[in-house]
Image 1 (cartoon, rainbow, N blue to C red):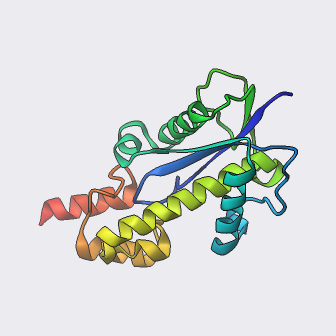
Image 2: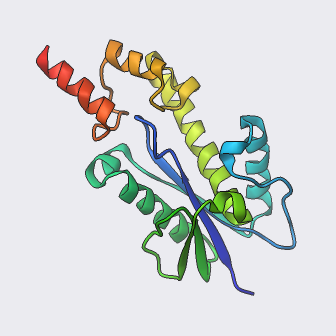
Image 3: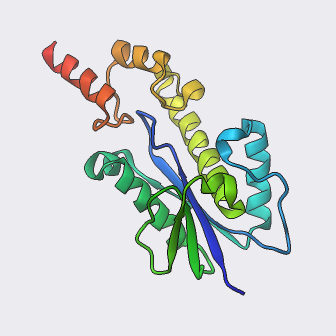
Length: 192
């Protein structure tokens, strides 16, 4: 049997926090109903599916690209690095991977990028769910330490509330300095 892993990331657009990636090898003998692109599912549904994926998949792994790596490499490269880490952590290793989007990480096996793969391939949908739930959980942990930014509500995305909090409270270590709104705030702070 050929083992294919689905791979996806979550958190490329936010101004704060790591980017997460997941890799999943589904078990054809233990299907999971309702897998879909994580962005189309409610938080409660994602959590329920994440538990089923972890229980029924042949293998799954979640990895991250840190804020420092995002700023040093750029968000695309940090996302691909997180994907490669997730694939490397799979046990058993897959024979190939299918990745949501246009780009594939550097891995030791054949890789295929599939546009809208999270809506078309069950294993990629499963990976999107694990990456999103892991990232959301991390943003809730960061909210405990940095409640002034409202991360529990917007998960670090550049909402009006987050931009206002950034202006009011300044840039924290959790913010991606390479992202334009954060860079602008840093330049304002330097002028004061």
